[in-house]
Length: 198
Image (cartoon, rainbow, N blue to C red; front, side):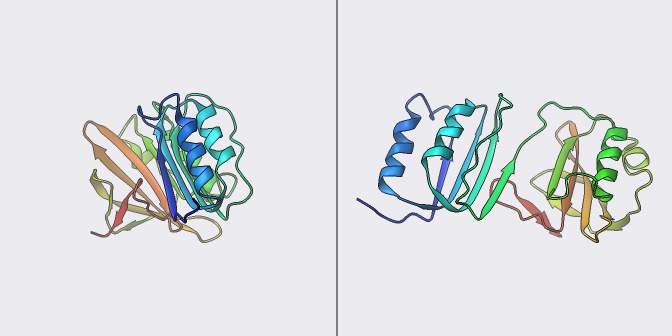
């Protein structure tokens, strides 16, 4: 019973229980190759995610939007053309000075050269521009709307030493303040929507 499927989306939520392997085995037995696989979920056992990767043959695009508790490396299949992994620094607090060091390292191309977007909660909104952007040349840009959060100020347009541009914006989400850096390579997805100039 072979048939073609364009995209498989697996949600590793509460219903993705102990018999998850039956679903994966059914997909594998009915689809020899999958052009695109999207996996998302919060805190599933990492072994289950690895089982999916080991048993489904993805030929095109693999996108993983999973928060895991374990910090084990994933074995990624070498049959894919495009890979996108999003992970979160859950409950991580960086000072604005630490954010400044991260931004500067990216601008100088010392680290994170393939970074497309970076989002972090702020511990101090008041001195974000003065401290987190200290020593970083920027120009004010058009406001950008991110998800459904409230934008504060405009965007701070920064340029990496190779010419790649990025927008740094600060948003308010309920009682939290969030700093987001999005490069010009960032492509929004339905799981991580970004709306420009609305």
